[in-house]
Amino acid sequence: MKALWAPWRMEYILGEKEKYCIFCVKPLEKNDRDNLVLYRDKNVFVMMNKYPYNNGHLMVIPYFHASSFEGLDDDTLQELIKTTKYCVDCLTAAFHPEGFNIGINIGKAAGAGIEEHLHMHIVPRWGGDSNFMAVIGEVRIIPEHILETYDKLYPIFNKHN
Image 1 (cartoon, helix red, strand yellow):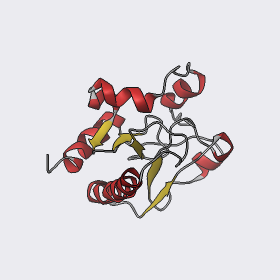
Image 2 (tube, one colour; image 1 turned 180 degrees about the horizontal axis):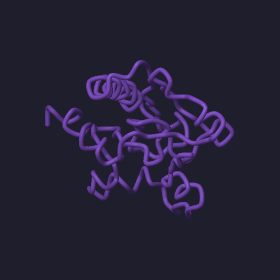
Image 3 (cartoon, helix red, strand yellow; image 1 turned 60 degrees about the vertical axis):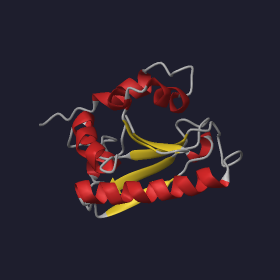
Image 4 (cartoon, one colour; image 1 turned 30 degrees about the horizontal axis):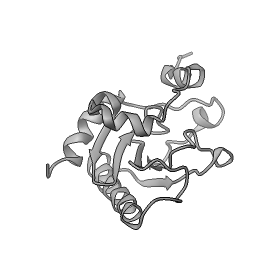
C-alpha cells in the first residue's frame, strides 16, 4: 500500500488563524515570492492559493478591503474581471488545462475561507483530476511544489514588466 501525504492541508486545518487580513498585509510586505504574489495591477493583485485545490490555483484580490462587492468602484470591478481573464490566459500558456472553475464565495455559508476580504478563485482543471482520492479519501494530489509552480508562472505573468 502506498501512502500519500498532503501535509500543507493539516497546517491550515489545525494552524492558528491570523488575527489580521492576509489579503491586506501580504501585498504590503513586498516579499512576493514568499507570499505567493504573482502579479500586481492598480486595483487588484494575483496570489497563489497556499492551500490549493489543484496545481495553479490562483486568486484575484482587490487591494480594497471589502467582504462583498459593496464599496468596490467600477474600475476595481472591471480590473477584477480583466485580471481573471489574464490569469486564465497565463495558466493556459503554462499548464494547458482542459477547463477552469472560476468563482467567488461570499460569506461563510457559501464556503468563504477568508470571508472578510472578497477574492476570485481561478482553479485549472484536467480530466480525471477529481477521482476517488479526492471524493472518498478527501485527499488532493498536487503534482508540483508550490514554489516551483510560482517560478513557472511568475515570468509568464510579468513578461511585459
